[in-house]
Length: 229
Image 1 (cartoon, helix red, strand yellow):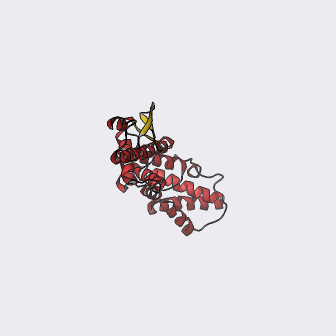
Image 2 (cartoon, helix red, strand yellow):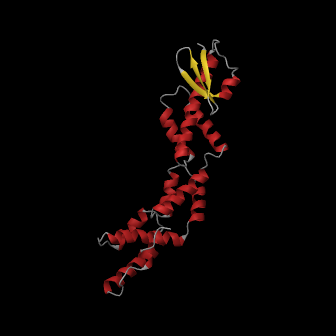
Image 3 (cartoon, one colour):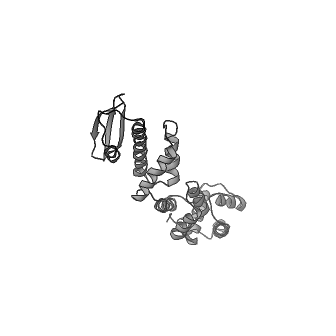
C-alpha cells in the first residue's frame, strides 16, 4: 500500500489518498515527521500510525465542535466521544480522547473551572433550584465537590437561596392548589434547598397565607414577586 496523493489544508491538516482508495486526514506535522512518503510502499508501522493519527484528528475535530457549541466538562467530553467512537475505532479510543483533551486544556479551550462557573451562573439565572440540586448536577458532570462548593459559595449566598425557595413557593401558590407544609417542605427539599432555607421560606410563606386569608393584605409581598437574580 502507498500514498497516491496528499493535499494540505489551511487548518494545519493534510488529507492523504491511499492506493486502496481510502482517504485519511491527519495533522501536517505528523505527515511531515514521517518524511511525506508519497508513492513509496508504506511499512505496517507507518500505515498503523497514519490510521491512528487520522482517528485522533477526527476525535479532535469533534471535540472542538462540542466546545464551540457550549462549555463542556472533561467528563462530558470523555463520555460523548467514547460513546461515539468506541465501536468504529481499531485503536484505544480512551487514550486518544485523553490526548486530545490535554491539548484542549493546554490551549485553554477546555476548563472544568470555567465550565462550572458558566453552569452555576446559568442555573442561578434560569432555575429556582437550591445549592444541593446544583451540586448534584455538577457531580453528574464529573466536577469535584470541592470545586463545585467553591464556585457556589462565590456566586451564591443565603439571601439568594431564600429568594429562590420563595420563588418556588410562589409558583406553587399560583397553581391554586392548597398544599400542606409537609408537602411544601418535601418539594423544596427535592429542589435542593437546605433545611435552614426551607424553614425560613415556609415561615415567610405561612405568614403571607395567614395575612392573606384574614384580608390584611391586598397584594402579595415583594418576596413573592422577586425575579430570579
